[in-house]
Image (tube, rainbow, N blue to C red; front, side):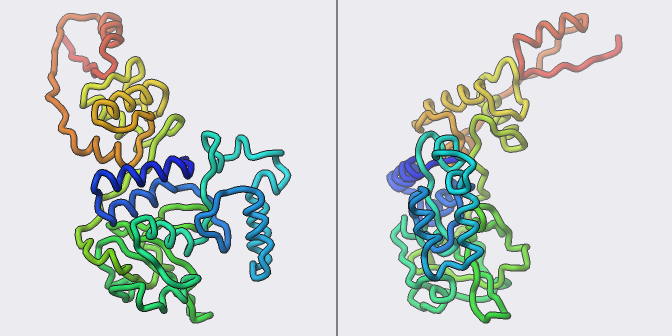
Length: 308
């Protein structure tokens, strides 16, 4: 998980590279995946005192007070201090937001201001939007998406559509959603982003040491295709020290910060680099144990057997 200092540094780097506002917003939302939800918060550092402040506000619902305290390892009594907490990565804090605060603060990073104190007042502030409508008519570009509560006749939740039906929103934590979920009912294009008619590219989640799964496999495959060694393990779907070393080497070769973490900018660079040619070599007459020993020298190679 990224801490707030890492995300701030990413944003400055993206701005300096000339990325479009829409792309920066999509990238920063993805970079904040896993950050915690706190009712009423907007871009506040995740500290025990800040959590107590929001839990102690007079208008904070009783169930939200309980959640704010119970999800904090210190306030819930599970540990004495923040060290070791998932929301204290690399000795620095993350930020806390509610759903409105998450959207508002990430749009503000590119100079787009939203008026209002929540989903309903934000929706009703016409100065915020260049276009509004029902979700069925939403364009395939970065925009805000809403949940309309028909019983209370107000808007109860908001997220950011980053293209292709993919949504990132803050509910429990910052996480992915989809327009296929029936709860999403309306959309609105923020003023200042109406020029982003090009669909946003599909986002890949940030991968780092300890991650496993299909995205690690994809990352490792790209690295191997580009000539970066993962010996002796090869493409195994596990983000270990060898993958960290290969990512750092790739980042260094491509003018990126060599931190060994594959985030949005590293994914973009990997997607842009064209891999070199690959070759097939056939060595006949080897015994199986000889082939196995030979493969130790070329861990990305594959072995096939033929009957003689």
